[in-house]
Length: 329
Ligand SMILES: NC(=O)c1ccc[n+]([C@@H]2O[C@H](COP(=O)([O-])OP(=O)(O)OC[C@H]3O[C@@H](n4cnc5c(N)ncnc54)[C@H](O)[C@@H]3O)[C@@H](O)[C@H]2O)c1
View 1 (spheres, helix red, strand yellow):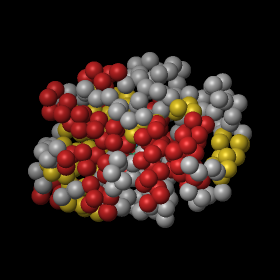
View 2 (view 1 turned 90 degrees about the horizontal axis):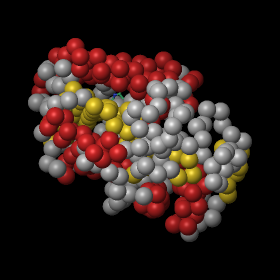
View 3 (view 1 turned 60 degrees about the vertical axis):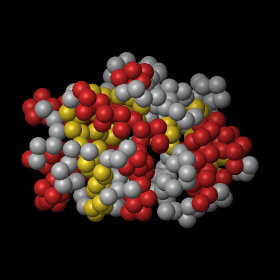
View 4 (view 1 turned 120 degrees about the vertical axis):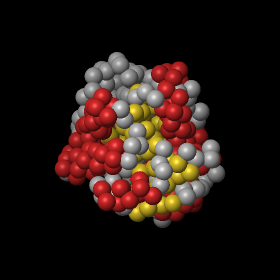
């Protein structure tokens, strides 16, 4: 199938392009390249890389006129929750209006299969863990999380009105790099824990900061569900197959089902890298949930998908990738 991947020059998008290409799909990438890298989309095997924005309706019409797209996988968005609190308009414009612009262009060209990068941020601080699709209310705590929930809402009503079928994939904490070291995350633009720990391990920063060591967890630090980026990429392929087979909208939480603490991430990195580095213990950060991990049994049951890689593999692949790209991509 010919698949349009927006944000396919970014971190998770490029890994997904590669999985699609491995299964003989033909992939067109649309990416503004504001945060992505053409090299990643190229290394992943995209047939065509178009630099452009999802808000550009003329460009989208032209693209859908020229290419017979069968499905769209939509990664293109901003993802910094902290920044979104300072600049909510930036997030609603890009993540919500940008998504709607893309959906409207799809409808104009009768393309009705859509896979959406949603996030566990739609749940905010969960009342129940592990977090399933049904055991917590939607309660985003940042404009970023809200923008993902709003896009999910748009998708729900576009199915009702126009029969556009979508799968919302709510990722937990994406981490790691491809096993062969060809694709990975750009640590110059990310604020995620694993790349920050890698920076400290590789001497690019003097220390890594731990926000809160007095939480009610076994070692006092926050717990998250780190999921390997290749596992996430595989889930998109399964979601595409599900859409083709069932022609039905749905949503899935994607994690490993196992939480790891901040301290575990740091200790595993020290062990695997063989490098010691300074850890600064700082007070709690407002708005950080104590512990959150996924119940992904619905994805296992319905998408025949289960995370294959553990924290060891995440740290090992991330360390190898960042060692080889210490000055960015
Ligand atoms: N990384 C995570 O842990 C995580 C967790 C949950 C959800 N997500 C979501 O997954 C998606 C991909 O995340 P990522 O980590 O690969 O981020 P990323 O920043 O590496 O990739 C996003 C890509 O989209 C592009 N882009 C942004 N807005 C665009 C627009 N309007 N038009 C065209 N291109 C645009 C950027 O240039 C970038 O290449 C995002 O939607 C993000 O919100 C990520």
